[in-house]
Amino acid sequence: MTDPEHQPRVLLVNRFYWPDEAATGQLLTDLAEGLAARGHRIVVFASHDHNPTTPQRETHRGVDIIRVRSTRWGRRSLAAKAVDYATFTVAIRSALSAEAQPGDRIVAMTDPPALVFIAAAAARRTGVGAVHWLQDIHPEITLALSPNRLLARLCRPWIRWRNTAWKHARTCVAISRDMAALVAENGVPEARVRVIPNWAPGGSSLAPVALEKNLLRQHWGLEGKFVVAYSGNLGRVHVFGPLLAAAALLRNDPGIVFLFIGAGPQRATLEKQAQLKGLTNVQFHPAQPQARLAESLSVADVHLVTLRPGCERLVYPSKLYGIAAVARPVVFIGPLECELARTVQQGGFGVAVPVHDAGALAGAIRALQADPAHRAAMGKSAAEWAQATGGLAAALTQWEGLLAVGPP
Image 1 (tube, rainbow, N blue to C red):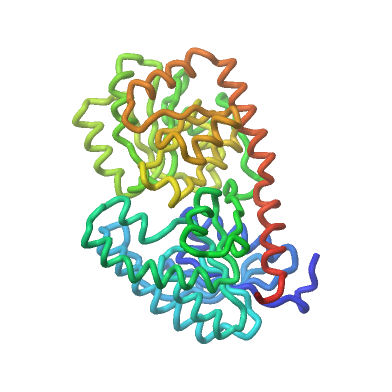
Image 2: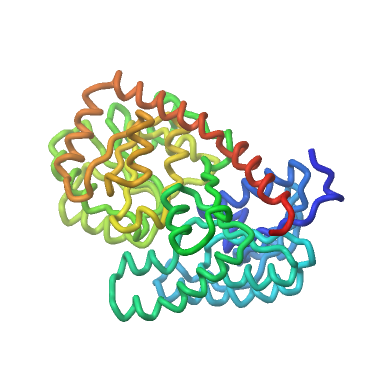
């Protein structure tokens, strides 16, 4: 364990942190608490959850937490989310300006995207280049989801400024090789680009829950069913039309149930479409707390992971690590030449089907339903892959090495 008195502080910045259970908040909590447990001085800057019992400043599990006041309207609309981004950006800029000290290491995630500029400015004051921890790439995601020439022209200055911030960073940490390649293509020297994969929430605590002991499976009436689940954010970078189309093709098989667990901007539309199509083999359930994540993920016999074409280098669904940790096979629906498709196929724990081929998706589901032995072998391969990645422990070691070196 490192002596904290001889370590510079590490300032971690993101919109969400414990007790929030947003995906980026869970990752940041794992990283912060893990580094603190290894003797590092960690300060987290995040938004306040508007709960009157949540203090603006506290120390929890060795981590000093500073929460700034900003709006929390994002679930209402894209405009509301933009206001959340703006209010948090203003508040966090002020907080970092007041708190950052010479020698501090600053690690900024990408929620909101403007953190790339705030962190770069704060890092100039500390004398140590910022580390940008890239969970997604903006504004390219916006352009991929809403291709528009005018919007593309308006985004060009942002991209130039962002690329400048990246180039002057201490390091850009990408969560996939495809993403790292894109960062390098935008002019960042390869020596300043690192790949540190994400991990299953909670580190090594996630493990399979046997079907016969799974209370959620019983509560949701899934005994004796072959459960095909999508668990996680129902966001715009994911594609769900093929999933409902496959459910329609399989609607006459009473043994197959499609399960959507989670929330997000596409959920209401999906529920409405499923109802209009009369898909009684489709269920929707809310996101489950982290304490029940192993149980929730283990409800499924097979998990679905999707990516909209054009987004495969801009994000990397971290749900894959949780699915693998509970030893479940994966069917990936998305671009066949992307890193995620290669990972599940080469690892022997998944298959990949094109976005617009609902028949292939239905066929893959039927094949997995009909072959329990193959399904079990795929689950075993998933667990082995999860173990081989090293999870949170491996990521912590890489982060320690990254943060320990002197200024560039």
